[in-house]
Image (cartoon, rainbow, N blue to C red; front, side, top):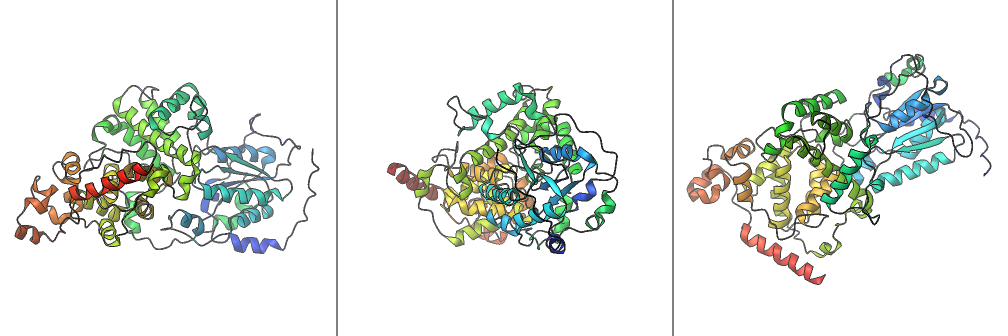
Length: 519
């Protein structure tokens, strides 16, 4: 057993420096831990180090993409620890521009932060003995956490505990018979479902934390009055966004229960119809970590008489869609190159993409002359959200009609979607581009006209987002350039199609065939 490090002398000169550095980073999470009696800890809640027990002081929960009280694994573990000796549980949330920029996710970035330095300062000055956080799957986040762990390892009497929380089933637990990770959804989902159905602990929800001792508000008074840092300007109207996506856990759970009660049983019938309100619209809350996949499945499963793969068609279909969310997280964890901007299918990295910025800009602005594509892009600009069927249509159009690199579209989505999630967004784009795992075959090319006629037959979705076309008939609205005379079309003020679908499809197909022949 190696000797313990000698305790480092307390550096009281750091206090003011710490307060200055923390100013602007302190979240308002302290207000969530109001004063109330503290219960005794569960017998199995406290772990002991092999090198000997660590003296319990205060506990720190480092919130990241999980700023919630319910079903938060690390928060619950920290609460269990803080029960020992009636100690304090302190919450830390750091807004870092650098972390957002690593994934092109910086529409609401805050000032830059020395994350490891801030965590260390909090630990030193608030007498923390135990630090808890939920593990994250992305490479940059893992490197950040390793840096924090390294800094904290130099301090005596500080224990770090990283918890599994992001996935219902941790990636290491879902393996093929040969011990390899799955790369195809259906066998993955079958294995995942078997684990969830036979191992109930995977769907167990963590309890909310205990309240802090009554003296917390007085001792940490200055932090109860701090305001979060102001955000950078956002291209979308803040009032509109607050009305469409009200903040908070209660709103997320209200939406979940309302969806399961009123629409989930018909989800399989309407989920591909963008003009219907058939989906849950929970993705912004899932992406922000305000609600968990576990909680969603638990509610849906309960409504489905404790069934996951059988029972009501709508409920089991929605649960399966949540399975896709899990699948792409497992892909991210098991194939780290995905985090580095690489194609899952390496051979497709030889594709010679077009660098036509003018066409890309028209796609971004919803001015392609293909109504269903333009409607999707304009919805994105207006409300920071796009129906999933439209995400597939516009992605396929960018890649297979314009032959523009899927990564351009992936980045654009991440910068503009309120529910932009690296794993799901990357998985969706690589599926559409035929470069990813279990993606659609390269020779499957969406025809924008047929997609429009099939999924928006009366043009209701198009009329909402492309008002220039709202006076057209149900038949004309899908392809106005061909349905109207040149004079009639000119009066619309709507752009001509920027490409010919049939000709563009051939160019794309020829390029993919060339690349595959090289393999």
